[in-house]
Image (tube, rainbow, N blue to C red; front, side, top):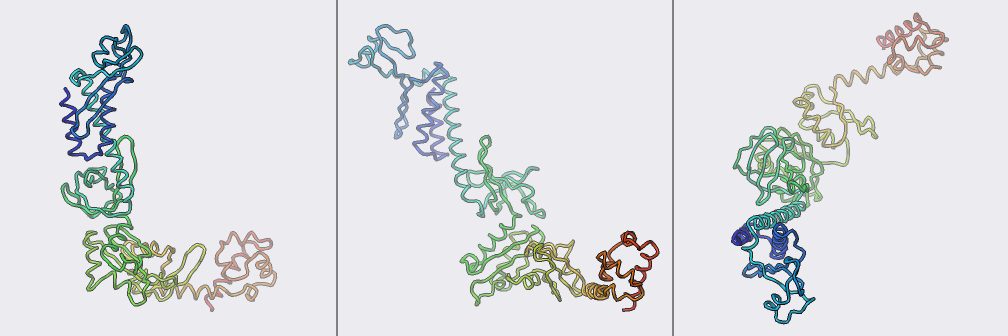
Amino acid sequence: MSYQIEDALRDIIKEKGVEREFLVEALETGLKSGLKRKFGSADNVVVEIDTHNWTIDVFLLKDVVKRCYNRLTQIGIKDARQIDPNAEVGSQVKVAVPLEEFGRNAIIVAKQTIIQKVREAEREKIFETYKGRVGDIVTGSIQKVDRTGVFVTLGRAEALLPPKEQIKTEKYRQGNPIRVYILDVKESPKTGPQIILSRSHPDFLKKLIQFEVPEVYEGIVEVRSVAREAGERSKIAVYSKDNKIDPVGACVGVRGSRIQAIVRELSGEKIDVVQYSSDTIVYVTRALSPARPSNVAVVDEEERSLIAVIPDEQFSLAIGKGGQNARLASKLTGWRIDITKESEYRGKVERERKLGIKVAKLKELSKQIREKLVENGYETAYDIDQVELKELMQIPGIGKQRAKKVKKVIADAYLRL
């Protein structure tokens, strides 16, 4: 039966490439498991392995006694001296156990234990290898495609490209090579390491730029931000540490050669490259390209919101298909951008100017009504314009008829100005 273990050893050494020290430990554990199955215990088992010739000797360490009551752990003095002439009662001798005497079941258990140990070591090796490669781009081969994702072979490891990390416009076919980004590596005791891949993550695009643009790889040009809707369109903001180098030109390349190489890798995904600026207004203006805002103003610094005024003829360009350009510009800059047409903005500004008239100057209202309105916080026409009739009626001394009059006076004043 020993040839089964020897065959397993040859396969392991040839295919798995495990270290000798580990294999010795796995062998000892496996053989002891097999002996435990046969004898019920393996406490006195000694395994000696020649790692050069891969010969295995198994012994039972037995106590030398006058009369033997347990053949598993004891040996009579007469039999002991046939093994070691100097044996004495109370000493111990090693009794050889030929592998052929293990029995079929014990050999199977030993072989299974060895293989299991080697698999565990291989899983641990894969985990340690790929744990340190999170954030890297690797090339693998598509092994299988199903509902759970695309299974990719990376050398001896198997990795998964989940549906949410795929580019929706791409078709994946078994046997095809694939370039992927290592997103995460998780350890699972049952299934081994789980290597999660991505082609849709913004950092995949960022890494591709690093590969294609020497200035980015060397650190002269930095990719400050990436906003991406994988397979459709992306925006990247770049910055140069060297004033002599145009960061946008470096990334685009001569006649677009560098950026087109990335576009091809991403199956035609459109990529806008804009120059980063620490000036929020300038940065947002650039991020909204190809549209050109006529004005950008911060609305709320804490809330990081602003308004971008766009010439009417460029409004659809600023918004983009399905709002895509506006969304990407917002993701890229980290600001909430309210995009409005130039004509609408002018009308809004003019209306707010007119509604800014003080209530105290509205002579069409009696002094008593004006005072009551101001006392209750309605100081401008705009304040009154923003509330419903019912709210004005709740002011003491102003009923339904007076509230209606107030609303009419505000409307008339707006039309007059």
